[in-house]
Image (cartoon, rainbow, N blue to C red; front, side):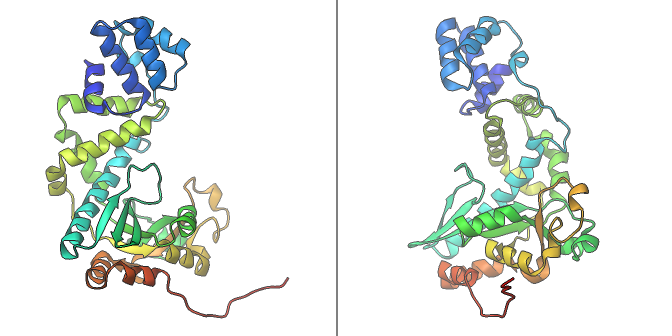
Length: 323
């Protein structure tokens, strides 16, 4: 029953758990053990010896007994729980992109969420111009923001510093589209399981309990397929986000001008008080623009208007120590 559900819902995934589920189903349908073991070896990270060992007992054994258990399974540690708010936010942004395309037909986009990199989710295109965008859900309010970075909690969103620097080198025109929705996580948790069929609930439980090689591929496949399948219900339960825009270049500029906005750089002994990655904290009010403003400018003037704005320069006096 379990392996059949996993195969049906996650059949295209490269996760080792899916390959074992397929092997079990093939054996139960009369497949040869050696052929099944070789197929499992070919499609997974398992050695041929280990594949043969698994196949030897797989037909009549409990499917879960061949899976690797997660070391952390609480909701705060569960990647599946964390991925749903991100996927919902990205789908909400996708709807905005479609609206922009309707307004200015020359502007298209590429969905790059599954291109195996983390910098870019969508790329706006117009003629030979490209404007990459990273969509972020800021779902947890930084309650100590006033004390630690000098911003009010409701006026503060984080951007990982290493990602911003990486973006300025590899995708210098990158924009962050940030949704600061502090109710989204709880709303998703409260109604998520009410949407699923019994088979989908079973697969959710498997992914929440077990890990193994290429588990993220299975997680992504499950999460994004569920968000697409139940989008009408998701969009009914969750709020319409007020996306705010800031470029990676500007995020780095804020870091350089206000190092205290990045605990770990401007705050003593931060490393002993937080295990989180270093973020530069941005003022929503003063350092971001609304998505409506950005898309209105694109609708009127095209992508070039925003690309020029991202790359704007000015001359100023700065310290240049010789010693």
